[in-house]
Length: 296
Ligand code: HMG
Ligand code: MG
Image 1 (tube, helix red, strand yellow):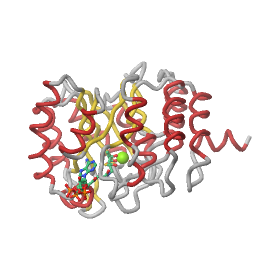
Image 2 (cartoon, helix red, strand yellow):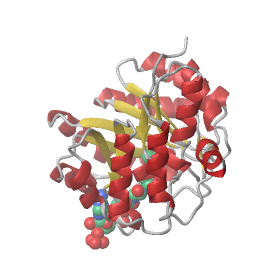
Image 3 (cartoon, protein in one colour):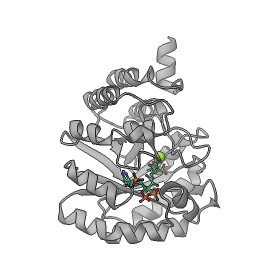
Image 4 (cartoon, helix red, strand yellow):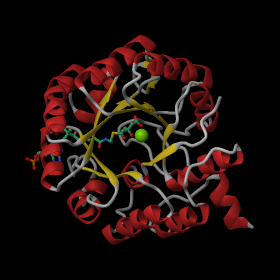
């Protein structure tokens, strides 16, 4: 009993670019976002309001937001009060807060323990809901941490339940360093599905070890029908050593459509979007669908 259609949440302009060494010109980012929308993507993380000292690639967040925030379900990330205030100032309609299950990862990423982050974030969720802003919570290191190793399923479930109780609309649960096995993905997402029926559940797989498509299939079987992905397979968290790209949107769309599951995304349109950023990147795009197409 697989779903008839799934929702893809595009994270290319944010997760995809944040780990990119070269500064991608703001106009290129703008066109990339526009082309992704033209390809049929409705939900997208467009940028993040984080410290420009920590993540210089995102220093143009206000410009990106000003151009795109009012057009469709565009999400901006914020790690703290300051980021949330900047996002609200730009008129954000959907904000993604992020926190790691692992303390050590959260320290490296946000310079706070998980508890310190939660203390700051929980009242903010309430306020955002009063302002009728859609709240997405991104849960990092839900399976493994680059510093602490295996994360207990119980710890991840508890943090997700805490966010759900606080009233978030969506949880994006992440395999930050691409170590989860499909059995682990199935187990965690089945339990989340059982315990949190009122929250949109989204799976966020990094493809570091090429297990992301298998994990998506496992998550589908657990009843998940929302997936984060990045056009061109770009991405990775700069504060998770060894982290590489998100699962490639084109590869997920191709697999799902081959399975008869609708995504609403136009592959040629997606390829056009990837072409827009490809020449501004320091890395070569190497994904199943895109790379083969370029070789033929
Ligand atoms: P800090 O140094 O402890 O912050 O960093 P601070 O409060 O001491 O402020 C330091 C400076 O940053 C000050 O500026 C602040 O104004 C400024 P100064 O006075 O020195 O000129 N500042 C900000 N500027 C813009 N936006 C803000 C902001 N906050 C403070 N929001 C901080 C703490 C959280 C700021 C820092 O650690 C940070 O920016 N971290 C973000 C890291 C990041 O972007 N990581 C990647 C995204 S998460 C991810 O990729 C995982 C995910 O994909 C899921 C998965 O795969 O796991 C979502
Ligand atoms: Mg990520």
